[in-house]
Length: 138
Image (cartoon, rainbow, N blue to C red; front, side):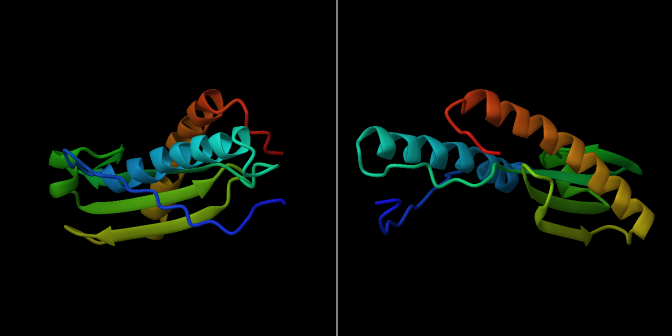
């Protein structure tokens, strides 16, 4: 059997919230899922790892006129623009969610924030790949 019908619930409890807690939960939740699936394979519950790609997320925003990667609480609570970006390892987007909280933002501003987020997500994906050497995603 390739992968029997299963329900997997990943619960991320945030003990101390800041601007990037949801995105950190997505990035860390993927690692937890991969480890759980690997455990299932070792137990003989499945034959193959059904994971098709890595998933990581990060927050970006504009704080005091400057683009910022992975906003902390102080930055997030006073950001002019707040954006969450979720991507897969191949570079496609799962989610782009941006809000002009203290100000509007232009298409050029958005492109700069997305570029900054892609840089941060690339670093997160590298960490995931290092921590999950058993995944053979092509």
